[in-house]
Length: 88
Image (cartoon, rainbow, N blue to C red; front, top):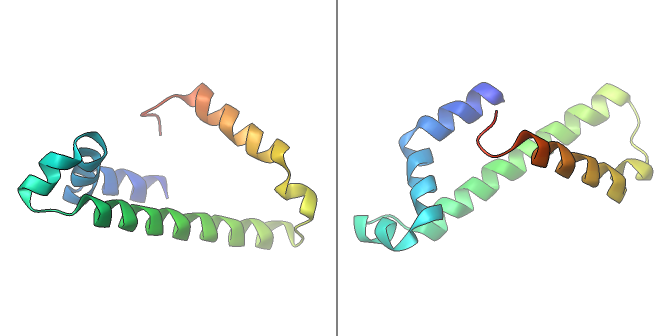
């Protein structure tokens, strides 16, 4: 997934998505729809998260409701904050 993510970021789609995040008016001027770009990124993100959840459930052979608690989400946010932006 890291390799695929890096390929997407360096592709023309990734560059257009980055531009749509920064200045959507310029992307519209070029002829691309920033809403559609962001929607495709959301769909890709949901698919990757769904795959990760399925693999997690298969690895542990059991998923309890305690794994969906706010502490788990907090841990992930701490990892993201410590890693910083732009880190793989």
